[in-house]
Length: 243
Ligand code: FPP
Picture (cartoon, rainbow, N blue to C red):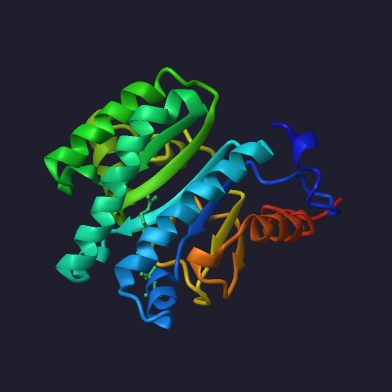
């Protein structure tokens, strides 16, 4: 991790987070406040994601994970679901073209079997390209993702692949969508709500949590700097005591 490149987040005794995860909330309200349809908020939110991912990469982080579409988001209107899927398709197409140039690995987390065949095919293509980019900064996009759903799928997979073996934490973790991804050090939720909403339920066990009122489309590089600064002042004990 290139900590030297990120010491601009001043102070604190913690190293900077290797993995930040974000609940990108507030797109709809941002648009409505401006008299625009909710879908316009998602379009600006997708741009914010691109900007923040590039910034996290430039800071030398290893992973950024974002919650783009939950297993519950299908309850939204057809128009809104269609608009979000359209933005994701656009991002997948762009990634196929630019991942190698930008040295950004894209990984989709979640139950992709419910997505359109077109999106599934694009995801397969990004997976093939990602294999050629070991060790690069990784953007993880949660799509048709729910923390409980992921744990159930992991348990089913463990039973299938390890019949008769005792269930262990390591065994379950190895069957999660995040099997090769370290747990997030810091989870940020924008948009002023104070809940986890079924995001990374297994992986959040020892994550530091940070909530901000900033609506996702307004979230900036300075907000990342502030979040890192706050993180570096946290006292992470993982259930132990300070010696
Ligand atoms: C939450 O805000 C946001 C979502 C459910 C969708 C997020 C999707 C994107 C940013 C676009 C696609 C992403 C990528 C990675 C290209 P909300 O709609 O719940 O906002 P509200 O609380 O103000 O209603």
